[in-house]
Amino acid sequence: MTIKQWFNWRSLLGLIAVCIVSGTIFYSESLSKKIADQEKNNVSVWVEAQKTILNSSDSASLNLATKISSTNINIPIIETDEKDRISNNYLNLDTFEVKSNKNYLSETLESFKEYAPPIVLVINKNPYIANKYYYGPSELLKQVKYYPIVQLVIVFLFIVIVMLAQRANYNSRQNQVWAGMAKETAHQLGTPVSSLQGWLEMMKDIKGNEVITLEMEKDVNRLLLITDRFGKIGSIPNLEERNIIELIENMVDYIKKRAGVNVNFEVDTFGETVILSFLCPPLFDWVIENLLKNGLDAMEGKGKILITIKDTASQIIIDVSDSGKGISKQNINKVFNPGFSTKKRGWGLGLTLTKRIIEQYHKGLIYVLNSELGKGTTFRIILNK
Image 1: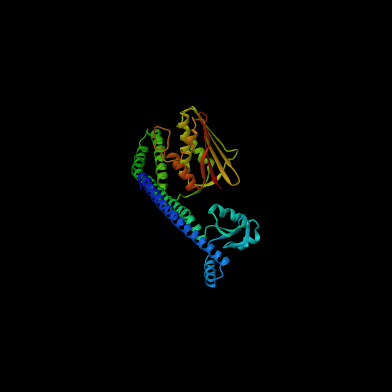
Image 2: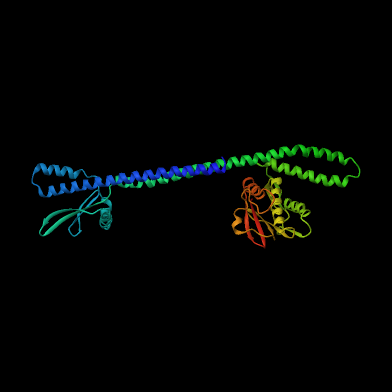
């Protein structure tokens, strides 16, 4: 799935969700209005039944009114007098709350007043005596009103899950593509490197080529190391217990010869000579090489690179600092993204691979510890012991 397809798919999901929720809200509002009107009519009929019970002496009418009165088992009602003083006559309320909370009836009455005007039953006109019946929404009506919210949450969760699944699938495919490209590169390099090794052995037998063959052998070995690195991308690396100080110092020596005389390198181990950790040496070398080369590019051939290696009780902390041009605040969070680069050359994959090697293969952590424009940048690597 391409990035364009991914965004189109996400837009379609959003549109479907909006249509579902909009339709549900509209239908629920219409349905809740009908239920509310029906409940208002039911309360009116119930009040009329109360009036009949109070005023009628006809046994048939009393029986019918009593039957109607008993049918209301859902709508909560509170009776007050003409001055809104609460009587002991209430219906479909939580009896436990009524007994345990002295403010429950008055608080509920206030909410009923906001919900709908009372239905008034006049008992006597002069002097004026009346009962007011305030009522609230039934449980069914509450459920209908809350239903769109519940459905909105469900639809939102569904979209999030689908998007996460699509993103994970997209990332998985991208990782497979990069791993496949890396392995294919290693495979393609294998044949010419093997051929170069053969020619190198032949040249060693010719007198006078000692200096040339020595330098060529270094470059061929370098190609073998690069081929080995690419071959390990996408595979579970074989971790070996190695001395981190030795690995880093060897890489610093290698880079130092190619950096020029205006760059000063320093490795501070706080007096330690051996710090052991389980590593994949070719891949860990690649990490240090990428960080050193980034520092050199940032300094443009002049400055200082300092590497500190600190051994703590539970972690090994490696800081790689340069005195280069630094990274702007808006770019600090982007430096590990694939394709991001401030240089005119390169694919912007060095730090991306560095992060993957440290965090996925070595279960460590790498991040920009600090950076200041015009003063330099420090990358920190944390490896668990």
